[in-house]
Length: 274
Image (cartoon, rainbow, N blue to C red; front, side, top):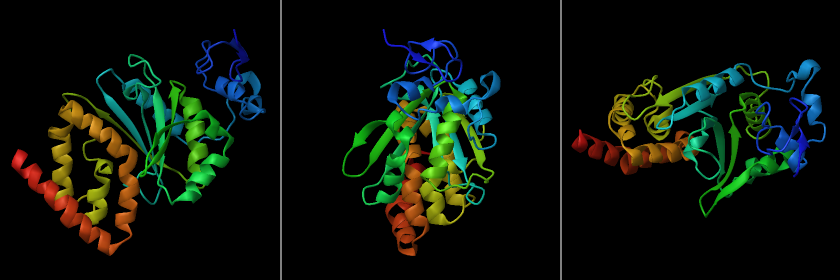
């Protein structure tokens, strides 16, 4: 039986996903040969000393604590100048059954790359930690890499911080903004005024408080998220929506096309349903 020494607690772990003694994902570093100095991330009394953005580990603990079997939890991470345009989402990992027991709380991250935008992809692949990710989508539109953190909020916060800094170019000194939403089968999100779901509508209309954006947000809360397929759609929209929104936001032509080809037809359908 293969064992590795857990950098977080020093135990000989046989579970190579998360240490069976302390729950740390850093056993994967040893298993995958990532960062041979992983022990240096932990100081005296095995206290974690690696880089984490202020408040992120606490926010991911909140995500895990809110989880239930029939709930979709997502944590949006935004830069200080883009509070309604998340640069990263950490999602409930039991919604991806490839690698996770659906009865066990945990967090995961999907990182999609658009072909032709090789700069971000190259930065990601240059990270030693990219070896911890599994490639799950490979089509003409997106390349997506996935990692299930389990319930190790410290390890999840550290790896997410590395992605934010080294791939997305977020300065380590930034004070990030977080929003963790609880989407329940019967209840609307505990922060239903959060506009992050309506990436494309917000980019098209220019404001997350625009009446038509608010109308779409109410439709999400009161109808879409009460359907099982609606929650599945929302999961994939969280994964890819912000990338399309960024392109729309920076182009007057794309904003106009988005309004007539996406927003206006969508509002027509929403009003019929309502």
